[in-house]
Image 1 (cartoon, helix red, strand yellow):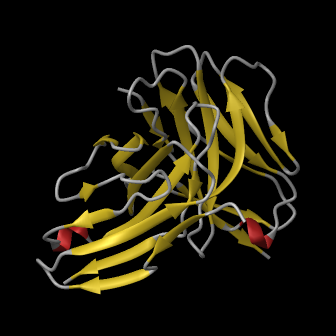
Image 2 (spheres, one colour):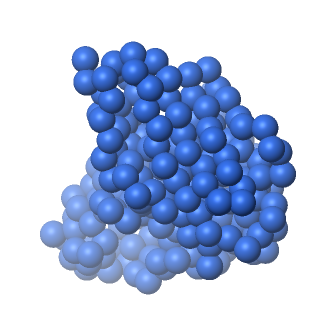
Length: 117
Length: 113
């Protein structure tokens, strides 16, 4: 069974600094997608960034970038120039390309990020 | 505006009293799903639907029912709620295909006393 592990329940970063959130996953598939979602206190789930497993180039969206290591099954999120609005719960998620009937997103347990002024 | 509309946002109910959480999307998505979010457990899938009249169990389906009579609507039914169903619930939708992330509703905080 595919699983997603986020080993850091909580992290803290100073405003304007850089922080990296870790995520590892387990799968026997070779093609899949990985996602990071942000959940601020409003509890809305917001897609931050997406990575296609067959693309070696790491995805980037403004201050958010990923370090995708396919062989290590690692998918970390780097937030540069952290802002107070980045404070949120962050979820890593995996979606198989050939999910059969399920085609579901599988989530990690989340990392709660605090941003200190 | 493209969105998933989920209601109610908050709900407190008593054990055994049937309730329905509604979910509607306006993006013509084929795939819809319900998740529950619990501290330390992340989001776990309850039920999903690949299209109209096609539904199936997720990882934690016990105590829940769903239906998909129209493409846009996917209600979650708790016929006899119990306190262990106290949770934060999310409806989500997407086009079929793994490259698509989900669009989420705003969540329903359910408390069963």
